[in-house]
Structure formats: C-alpha cells, structure tokens
Amino acid sequence: MIDALCTDPIGAGAALLIGLFGSAHCLVMCGGITAAFSLSVPEAKRRGLIFWSLIGSASAGRIVSYTALGVVFGLLGGWLRADHELLTMGFRLVAGGVLIAMGLWVSQVWQGLSALERLGARFVVPVIERVRSRAAPDRPINAFKYGLAWGFLPCGLVYSALLWSASTGHAGQAGTQMLLFGLGTVPAILGAGYLSAGIKFSIESPWFRRGSGALIGLYGLWTLLPALMIT
Image 1 (cartoon, one colour):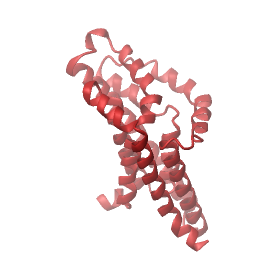
Image 2 (tube, rainbow, N blue to C red):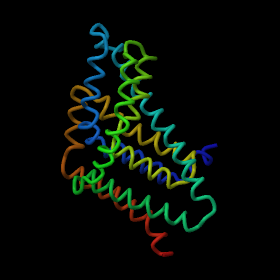
Image 3 (cartoon, rainbow, N blue to C red):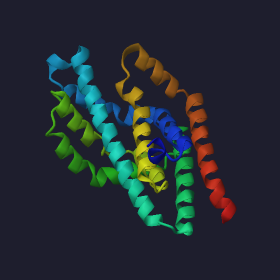
Image 4 (cartoon, rainbow, N blue to C red):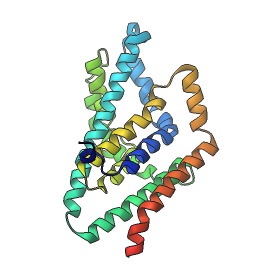
C-alpha cells in the first residue's frame, strides 16, 4: 500500500522540506489570508480551543486541496508521458529546472516564480473569492470549506510544486508529495505567540534561507543528472 502511494521516498521528503523552507514566503503570501480568516470568525470564537479547531479545519481543507491537485497533476503527467522515453526525460528536465527555480526563490536569489502568482491572480482569484465568501468560518465544517477554497489561491511555490509533482507521472506519488508539502507549510500558518516568533525568526534568517534554498537546488540537480547524462 505504501509503495503504491509513495514510489520515491526522497522526493516525498523533499516536498515536506520545501513546504517548511518556503514557509517564510507563506508568511508573506498567506499572512493576510490568515488575518482575514481570523476577522471572519465570530468574535466570541476567536480564542481558545474553539479558534484553534476552526483554523485547524481551514488548514486541513487547504491541504486536502493541495493533495487533490497533486493527484490530478500526477495522473495528467502519467497520461502525457505514457511509455515514451523522450517525454519521460523531458519531464525529468522540467522537474529539475522547477526545483532549482524553487531553491533560488526560497533563498531570495531569484524571484521569477512570482510571475506564476500574477498569472493565477488574474484568472483564479475572482472565482475563488466568490466561493470563499460563502463559507463564513463560524463552524469547523465551514472553516474546512473556506480552507478548500484557500488551497486554490495563486501561489508560485504551490504551482511549482504541482509542476514538479506532475513530472512523477504517478498519482499516488504526486498526491503524497503535495500532502507533505502542505503539512510543511502548517507551522507558518498556525504558528502563534512565542513559538511562532521563533519559527518566523529562523525561517526568515538569510543563512537559513540560503541553506535551505541550496538543499532544494541540489535536489533539482540530482533530478536533472540522469536526463543530462542521456542527452
């Protein structure tokens, strides 16, 4: 069962690290969304376990959206490449290139992936905002629906992770990668108080950013190597 879902444990682990290392971006990109979520919660429910159950439900919805998108992209990637060796190598080249781009982005050396966010914002945001506005997070089920919509909001890091997941050509692996990617972003979204401040300080440290970006880039080079040796 595990083998059917995760054919590349290293890739799955890398997805978790990318989500965690990219959390500094999530604090910038999703911080406003988190604040808007908090303000949407009835004032009487903005404290204690009730609030955490609501924001936890929203995070669960967001991760479900990521996972579902991963499965779809994995199926699409598998359908496109089928048994064609050339397409397989092409997908590997794309995956390696995307990972290197993510590494450069996380380390703040190059911000070119922001173009994906601008493209998504133009076409996706109007639709998602209409859906999200109908799900006031006053109960866990409504917060979950809010999170489902949140998962489709444009994010260059998410789009890049989806392209990388599609290159696996395997629905289980792609879904697993996006699930772990989503889990990796949770500390930045849920973090609060002293613990949140400590996490934020660490992930916004230039050394942490550069080191984590370098690790992601090295994994991208490792992904590229077999394709480059063949070509």
